[in-house]
Length: 336
Image (cartoon, rainbow, N blue to C red; front, top):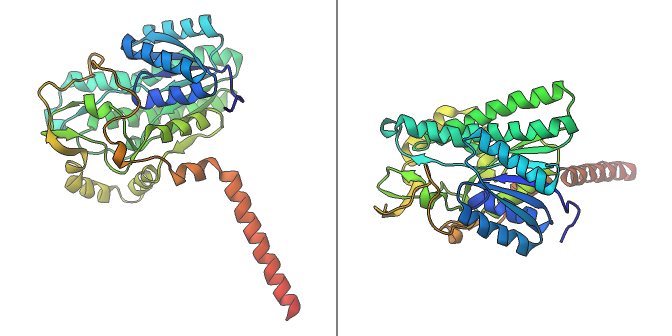
């Protein structure tokens, strides 16, 4: 085990399942003390036992991040129990899969309150404590959909776009203040998480992430790396980088491509069950972990993430290759 960051105090929102659960596991392996924030106590307690089994410590804090006072109370509890918060990871999310024409105003409000304002609330609670100490790290969990909206996920895409704008303002303000508090926004790909088991949907077939699909551990390792490095943005997966870059170059092409493929690519075999759980308003019942139903179709590694986290090594290799080429050319000229 790498003990370099042992005893860090970390807060993770959306900690009880999916990507949040994988992030918690990654920090627990490094001996962190973790404040676990999510709405459902039962899964939080299961996550706490998992953390302790991996070598970390955890505090269960049932919290709806849409309510700032609940987030503030959770932050206070973490610092009473574990001491100053070093890292705050804003990850909690909910969603609705539906055409815009069938969406309801209260659904947009709820997704915005959790996915956007939840990250704002977490950031405010973290800044309140980190700025006076002039240290700390905030990670905003974003998405390729912060740049390229897709059909059937208008509420979620809009919330991620809002986080992007919020992050831009925050980056520049921290620079203005010469603050040593650091912020990174990590843009995620499609992942194999339980969100597709409980997302509210109006589609006829079962929801799925848009392939290619990555295991949540790939993203969790990227979040852990981002939490310990100064990087404004970090993309996870080549699909994320291509979606962001492609939308900058030709958004109209994305519109037409998604109009043809975006509905089918987000559904797979089988009708939606009438008894399907939903987590929009309340925690979905059941004991969910980090993974969803797509293990056999999910990537367990990303060359793009490796390259992103080894820039200095790659840069050194490129310089070495260039130097060797120059030396070879000089040697050949000397012999001629």
